[in-house]
Each structure stands twice: as structure tokens, then as C-alpha cells.
Image 1: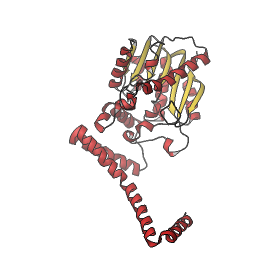
Image 2: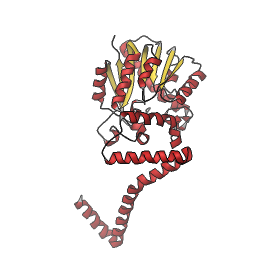
Image 3: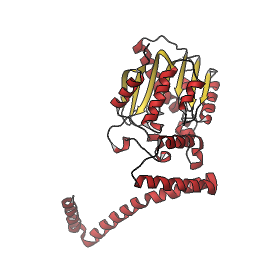
Image 4: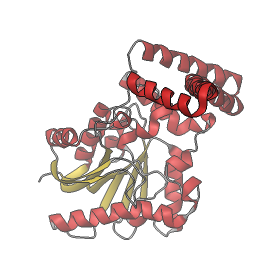
Length: 322
């Protein structure tokens, strides 16, 4: 690296002389200063947004949380799963106070990029087609009686199942998303939506609120939002219990390809929410087997594939054995 820098400086001297060297050094210094100050600028932008949305008391809480997370990073530590679950709950119910467009991230039609209804419909259509392929591969008779979705959001998946099932159960930690999903399905003429609200701290309450066995469990663009890998196992275990014997499951995760961008996060949910949790593909497969699922196949969708939202996705097609 030192040799390359020496060659670059020599070339600059030969072509531009002292002024060229001075300009090059000045550019390097500007870049380093900008990178060093970026976290401060980001904090100032966040603080201004929080002050407007939540007032001085909300700003003080926000700054206290940022200082705490900074200390944790310095100590090389992360937050506990309970702390992260609490942050998850706050993010999806109160994130608008920090400038987060929850309708955008929850796939509400006519919000953010989903103002294009065709784009919104395409988001869930690819998952319905995967479901059709899974039924065909397993020889499962259609239509099904009922389905349950963990993280139904604004109904981007559900809208494609209204002619397939008599009952569609949506499990959410955000009441606003359940209301939006029910509204969208009712407008489409479907009255079989069953909303189930749980807290992020106690996802197992879904077993009490939606006790009947289901033919299909669906969860897409959700497992990467969960607070930890072990939390994802808890949700998968709930899925296994919600399914009837022989029931099918389609679960999408964000997979870890070894790059820094894809690794598991352990703190600061508000900053990393959309890419918080990831698994190695073989790791998730074996965890599902340990729970009792029979994984049938996995479909990998690398980044920037048409029809998907542009990340590292793996779709696991599974069955609860008879």
C-alpha cells in the first residue's frame, strides 16, 4: 500500500507539481474529516426529527439511548434479547415519532414506494406463486381451509389468498397494521380475516389467541426484522404448533453470505431494523429440523433479483410431518 501511494504521489508531482500534491492531500483530509463527522451529523438529524415528533422529553430519552448504545459498542457488548424485543415493539408502534414511515416498511398500499399498486401486488404475488409450487410438489389438495401469516403488515400477501382460503389469520405486534390489513381485505370483499395482536416480548400468546390448527403458515420479510436468531427459533416453534399435522410452511429469511453487510446485529434496532437478523442457510435448515419441521427445499434469491425487494433472501418450504 505504501509503495502504491508513493507511485501515485510521484505521478501527481510529475503531472501537476506542488499544487497537485496539495490538492490531493486536501481532498484526502476532507474525506477523512467528513467520515469522522458523519455519526455526529446523523445524530443531529435524528435529534431534530425526534424533537419535532416527541418534544423535549422524547429527545432526552433518545439521547440517553444513543449514549447507552455507544457505551455498549465501546465495551464490545450487545443488548439482551428482552431489550431488543422491547425496542422492536417500540419501533413498529412508535417509530413514526422518530421519523420512520411505518406504512412504507409494513407494505401498506398507497404509501411510499407502494403508491404504485401494481408494484404492491407484485410483492405478494411471487410468494403466492411459491405457495402454489409447494402445494404441487407435495400433492396438497387446494383450496385450503385456512392460513396464518406472521407479520401480515398491510396485506400484500393476504390479498392473494382471499380466493384460496375461508379464513386468513394475521399475527402482528402493530395494531395499526392489523387494521390496515383488515381494511384492504374487506374492500376486496373478503370477510374472513382474523386479526391477532401479540407483544414482541411474548410472542407465545399467539398460541392462546389463535389456537386452531392451520393448513398453511406464511412469513415473509419478517424474520430479518426479529430481534435475534434465537427469537426466530421461538417464532418457528410457534409456527410448528399452529400448523395441523401435514400442514405446510413457507418462511423467508435473510441469509448470511459472510459479508459484513449480511451479518447478525446485536444492538441499536432503530438503526438496523430492516437488516437486523440473518442466518446461514444450513444453520436455519438444521434448526427447523430440530423443531420438528421437515424442510423440503430452499430457494435462494441473491441481491437485486427482479420481483424481490433487493437483498439476500432464502425461502424455506417445509412441512409439519403427520
